[in-house]
Image (tube, rainbow, N blue to C red; front, top):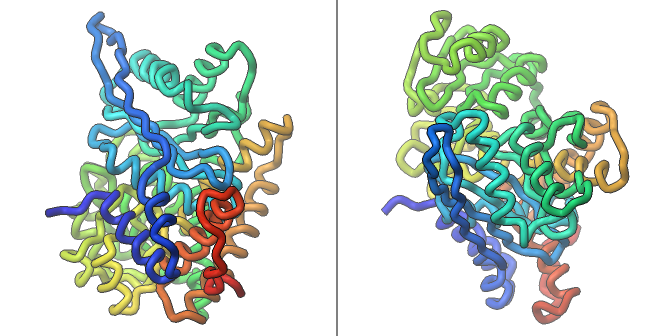
Length: 424
């Protein structure tokens, strides 16, 4: 039976808990979200009929503070996906020095099939339904797949209207004019760029002259391709949900993006070879960056992966079985909870600016992002080399240690001195 994202997250959690020799009570707390809300959202469509959409908001753990995490609008969204993402968000926040727990939201919908007015009504309806459990000091939703600065701005406007006061820190990922942060649009991609630089430097190589393949050409994939090209990396292939395009000499990323802006898809792009999405993952390259959805690199296709570095732009793109195969092949992996944390980090920066009525420059945002990315890399790479463990396990140990420390301090679990493995 095919694993879902939550199955994968639980396997990763169990591996880390067992390695750290933590008590079963800690494992039990971390296995499930602390709060789970499923809602039904009636939306009047443009034709006058009412459709009912199902949505979720899961809050995984609050030991480190109020929760935060994005909201996905996707036709194949499931509760299991959202639960997994909320767990990963807890660890991502802890690993990257963000004083928040993890949460995630989602609505089962294809936003591309809605008119602008229908999408706005859905956004407002979703916020009304989850209003009892959110707020700047409870849980502040951000953007994710299928949502944008515009959807977040509608959500914030609805939240403020309900509460009859301004609260920019209640929603992240907003438009700049409403308190959004500079640097947010490219944040996830820029974090992936920094992660790639760190891994390449650790292997005593350099970015210029590398080749890259990127699965996904949405908000993350397109900006990553552009940033890679600016760093001297030759981007061989990119993909969307319909198709993939490939040029062994390297794509003109600006031209590809201009085409997608006109046509809405990579289909029909005449300046490169059209290939399948599965074929794209197996191209020979230096850097493979899956930037779409989870569970795309599996036990079945991992033996045919021919990349030197795997940079996880998506959450949970690699199954545990596939990871073992890749490590045995010598593939160096930048795990998701570190590599793609740039968007999470800048959402945190956005909240700090909102709560302080401040407004940072893009240079300041990017400098802070790079500094934290570098610090976290040094910590996990040291643990990876000293303990001879995978980079992912190093990330999970560091993150879980911080969450457990907070839970012990709060008295949620017994105080024990068994976290020596995290010191260094």
